[in-house]
Image 1 (tube, rainbow, N blue to C red):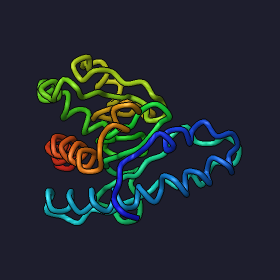
Image 2: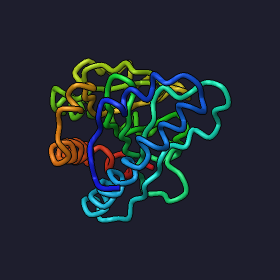
Image 3: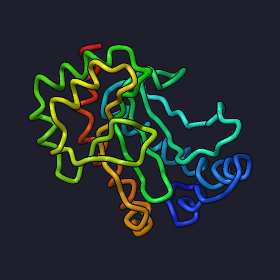
Image 4: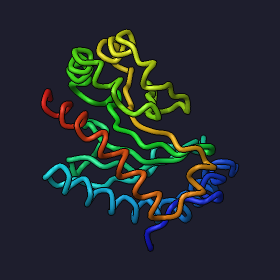
Length: 205
């Protein structure tokens, strides 16, 4: 598929009732775009980081009843999987698009990463004001990067299920307005801003 951004129909996918029906729409509408966009982003990150990076597209294979509320692609330095590694994510809920540097609960060494960020929380607070943080990849909610506290990072360090996702949200309306070049540039700029934190995380693993 030719590289292109997202449109209203892509976000509306998450209002389709039924697991099979929604999964069919994800596979037909969104995943081809993920492959094209993800290939572009994987190549970009490979060059930026000076190492081979690999694209993963969420399959939602474990679902048997409830349809997914979001879907995503991930890019990391491991060919076999991404959940146990620091990784970059791009994905959609019904009302917004997210771009994350993600440290989720399956990641061994998440406590070490949180400790490192705790030692220099000011570096996180120096990210652009438009950046946000989530502590649970299953939830839509996110808070301003400026509201991230040491208590939050301590929880990421000490609670196995706690997560840390740092990045940016674009509302559905914002994402739809961007043409393909604007969209890709926005994502790449966000990822480039997150690369130093990704490198910092890898250094302690």
